[in-house]
Length: 505
Image 1: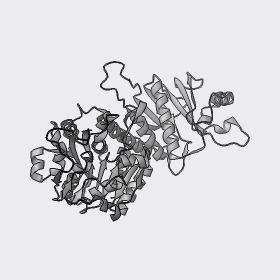
Image 2 (image 1 turned 180 degrees about the vertical axis):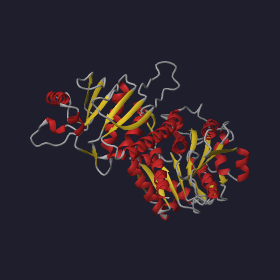
Image 3 (image 1 turned 45 degrees about the vertical axis):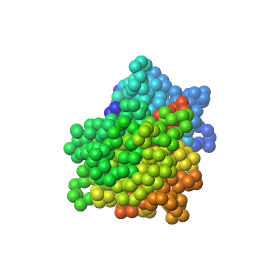
Image 4 (image 1 turned 135 degrees about the horizontal axis):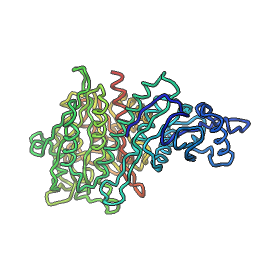
């Protein structure tokens, strides 16, 4: 889908659908015309009178998303006029996102190939029109993803191919155009992450992820891809990672992506480590059967890293980034690790396996040790790691734990800006003590209490050489129930973080 901005005369603009968003300004005399945008006034008395009658009749309510579509409206060149209520004069970020999604859903239901959207009078508290342009571009771009790629009949068709945001003047036109491009690039990364996450485990194997990474790198000179196989992992001493994959016939892959976007050779890379368990049965510590199908989503950390790299190559962002993706399948089998086994990590530290379903940290610890060789500016790992995080934060925020306050704060700010929010939890030494083992340097489980924190404490033992943050996305990476599917989070957060790092360099 193409998405851009333009300064145009709304009355004479030819389009299949003109979208007018009413700002719903407060008026103590209850005058419906007070809800009119400046642009609505500009559309002329005929349209104003028509909208006023629609409001008086209740066909358009002061409720976010309330809308009506008029075919061949008088006085306009547009074939359709879609009028959408913003619900109030001033919106917060979440309200604006809901408004943008509502517009996207309504356009998706219309048989139109192009649309013009007028948003200029919408006020979002603390955000300007450039932010609005980026977010609505991202949201509309996400609408082009459907999870029915493997269906043989009744596949969804998205007819909308071109959207223009109407702006009142040329003053900020270039900034808004750039914001549209950036928002669309982020949406492409989100959609790639969703696509990979929604694929079943019999298709999206570690080898499949490796092929997708190679495919992404092949057509971009700034991006290179290296795949480390099991024999090479063994030489590197990645016995913790290899212990997880011992029970399956699917070979493990360590995917290493390098994006050289900075023009300064001295710039240290930001390393993103994504957990890639393409299916997690729990191993010998077998999971309950109910909802086990959703364990195909245990590679959403890996999918988010690939989504971010899609954004990087699409925008040419001025930053150096390395992606490290340990990709495995966790299955029971004759060679599978057992509770009570002890393995040695790449760092040389030994780990007692108390539960084979706490496998994500076993592959991440070797990936974090490997990440140190890039002499990183900082390292961020992304993982669907603990059910405890779902119980703590639900599906609204991802968990954040870090050994560096500055890095944590930057991620929190990026989360607020992108509306892909996170919440920081502590990694105090009191929690770390729960990992004590009588037989090895540490256990891979810290008991029933504070499971999200003790998992991060485990990872922190392998991230002492650099500034590090851990994102637990177990509650945010996918949805269950009737709306089951990957969300693409935390691609928006990570993209915003990298955008700000590039701009502040």
